[in-house]
Amino acid sequence: MKDETRTELIKAALDARQNSYAPYSGYRVGAALLAQDGEIITGCNVENASYGASCCAERTALFKAVSQGKRRFLAIAVAGGRDGGSLSDYAYPCGICRQVLSEFAGKEEFQVIVARSVDDYREFTLEGLLPCGFGGDSIR
Ligand code: THU
Image 1: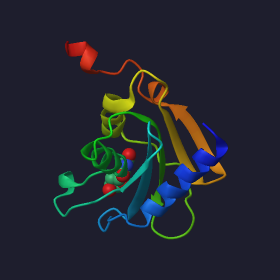
Image 2: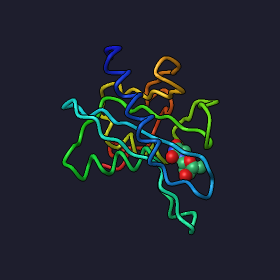
Image 3: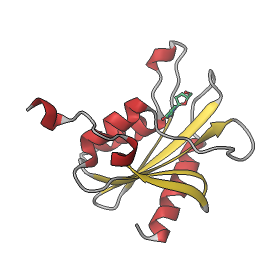
Image 4: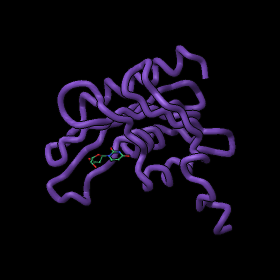
């Protein structure tokens, strides 16, 4: 991925984090998904008083994108941490989000970028974060 694309994606995730609704955990997450057509779709975590009804930032972004007709994605940037101050750690996608991303990641290498700032990030492939995953091919 080009440096400028990565920077744009991380900035979008940090911006999306501003909209996080996390009154229960105080852990605010933003995500930015890069679709194959070049469009960036963002999401944030949205919590609920019935905790299990909460949705992670990554799935918010993915479900928004799919509902807009997107089906293929190249990368996602994720930025998360507790309220206030700078991000003290990298926010890795949870297991459910890894699984949901894998549904639409395709065979090409899908990149997962976890960032604390535009110049402080780590990059993985989804295959690396979810090896031997369960997918549509497993049940056909
Ligand atoms: N969260 C995400 O948004 N993404 C993840 O991959 C892990 C967790 C959110 C869910 C909840 O609102 C808060 O972080 C604390 O778990």
